[in-house]
Image 1 (cartoon, helix red, strand yellow):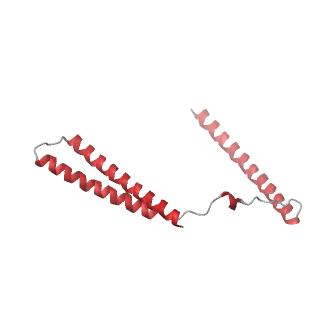
Image 2: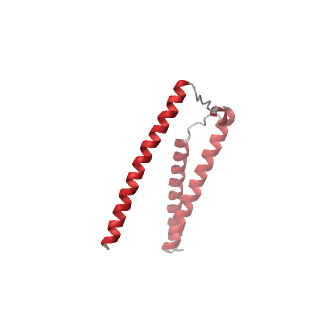
Image 3: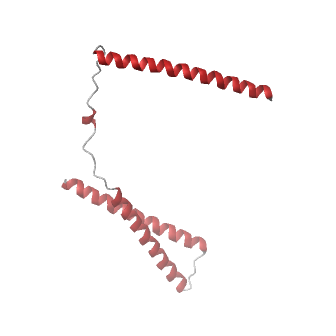
Length: 128
């Protein structure tokens, strides 16, 4: 067991020394490239990447989050109301059905909130 630990330590030290040498060599290479660019020997023309991207999209994260939370709240309220009416009419649901009801209503209304946010975003993009 001690031989294994000593082998791991030796390999770790060798790897560290290798990485240090690599670090210094890369630094020298980078400095040589920078000097060439300063002297004008290796002038690099970078492509114009601004044409690759369209105009920035407006930030509507707040709208999405707000409508998602409103939808989740409406779904929760709807599930509570449905749960009350089912229990009130003696059609009692099991606890698993109640969990599914709460989850389904929250997902349904949350999805509707995101759909409304998407429609508002598309309407604003057509205007501008």
